[in-house]
Each structure stands twice: as C-alpha cells, then as structure tokens.
Length: 100
Image 1 (tube, rainbow, N blue to C red):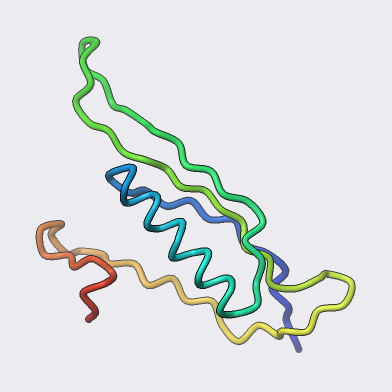
Image 2: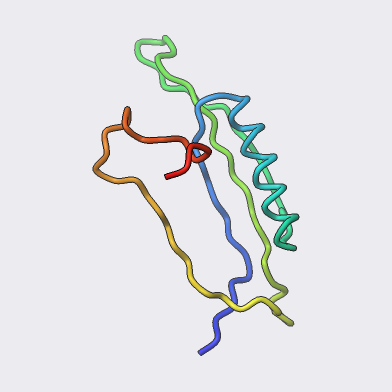
C-alpha cells in the first residue's frame, strides 16, 4: 500500500525569541531544499506565573508543512520517525546542531 503524507502541523517549544527566529529559518530552508511548502508559521510568547510574578517564559512555534497535493500526490511516504530524547536528564541533552 502506498501512503502519501499531505501535510504536517507541528508545535515546538524553544526558550528565546532568537531561538524561535533561528528555528523559523531552519524550517524555511528545510522546506525549500526538499521542495515542500512552509504553509504557515506562528510564534507565541508564553509565560508561567506564580503569585502574579513571571517565573518562566518560552516560545511556542507552530508551523504547517505541505508535502503533497491531495488530488495528485507525487512524493510517497517512506516513514515517520519521532526521535524523542526520553529518560535523559535535561542537562545531558545536546542541542540539534551538536550532532549525536
């Protein structure tokens, strides 16, 4: 059975506005390099408060990538692989750009 991924909506948390802007550039380049379409991008500042004071802040980046036209798809789906880093202390997790 051939499967066709039409589009994907993703939400990613990053710590700073600079990180959000950098991720936006990375996703734009990824889409361009693979002939996909970056259909939507939003980045939203979020905070966590305690007793009226901000104790934590971050950005949620939400984007939609379009891979195929549903009526005439041309790129078959090979696999979807979510590589999550689980059971690793946060201080031991390496950013994406440091490689494995």
